[in-house]
Length: 154
Image: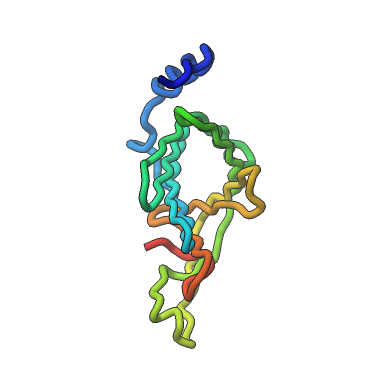
């Protein structure tokens, strides 16, 4: 039997569960990290002070985080799942991305035109580089191979 959660954790859980499901009304922003070792897709929704973040590994359980979004010069996302907390400081940016990857085409000498995307460059305390979230289909970072770099997701 797992140990009992601290009393304040139960209160926080009730508050999180009582939030509206912003994924039904807010636009989605997505980021995918792809490497030989792992692939995760992060989908973020926020509006009216409420935030929701889904983290979906290629194989494994979906984790949903719920919490707040504070908009000013940046958007500060503070969310929690039943087992973890996460804070992102997101700056609005425009990114020039490679189009979605076609490994065969990536080897050709002719480079396709870049795509301009409005993004949220979200910084996490544990990472030097931001996670850039873009409107669907989203932004992908491919860590290795012919398609390495930031690009539009498929």
